Image: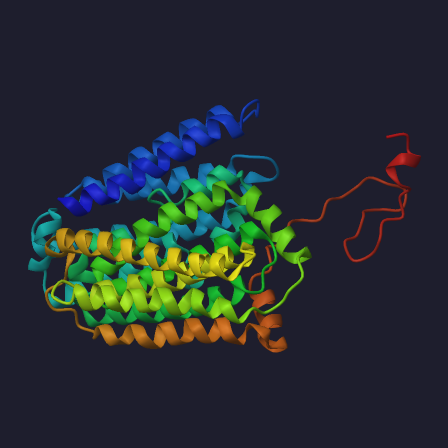
Length: 434
């Protein structure tokens, strides 16, 4: 199946890239070998989860991935157990929900084959579908499980990148593989739409309030993975599959290059800000190119393709605007906008070809919710982006995205423990002979 091959390209390709990067970046670290072993096992379990057609093997691979992910988050300096505590609790709930769904589907359908789950009755499918949405939300850091992914940022950067090799995006893969129970039943579809939509809007507001590069990347991942839950709930599985593959490679690369991102953020902060009217063309020209391509491919474009195309238009517009900011002449700015248009056109051509290959394998025949429900989610997403300048919204988003406070460190000193709410009374280190 081409859809499985596409997932394997993501899992194996992203995993190999991160492990090769870690072999250099974690050199001489005491936990390097442990990271490589755990990372390799995560990739292997992700491959097993993607290729299996048996419910029991799927559940075992899911549980093993959860346990390995907790161990991956523990690796690194600092208190690894505290860093992974929220992930462990979230995964326990998600694993229990998945095991319950597998038991219900296996008993109701009379077998453990994934292709046979549509034989289960409507009640069994509905209950199993809700449990599957809970498991997917726990893995994707959505809903009440939203905090485990930002809490994991204390681990080395390759750990955050490796999570995009079938871990954090495993929730969407689960709903795609078991589509009759997720998008084919009304309770599960509504649960995926509500949990994913609310988390997407929340995470987008938090992204705009964070000033640290890795924090923005983590909350952006929460927003994007929650959006894929919405797509799965609406039966837009082709769009969800294409989106999570593109997002996995893109966001994994951003995490690996987060050091460069910090330096770029410092340069942007120091650079003088001046609005340039020509930068509007960074979005206008790619948008016109996208409309032309959609008109030319009208016989092959479906609703599943419109969502990733719209997101790609926004991404190409921001990329073109960044290029235009470095251009010194009007010709360079027009060239940057034209380059953004070319990128969008190439993306649409490649995506339309992939969409035709995977449609027959992952498309849902009769989703219970209309695909138009994606519009309110996108409106809420954009509203959060436009309202981030409000003092109330900014304060609320900062409070929601504040990192979990660690336990205060007790220091044996004459004046007692050091408190975080007042300066320490101890003399500076240079006066202690340190």
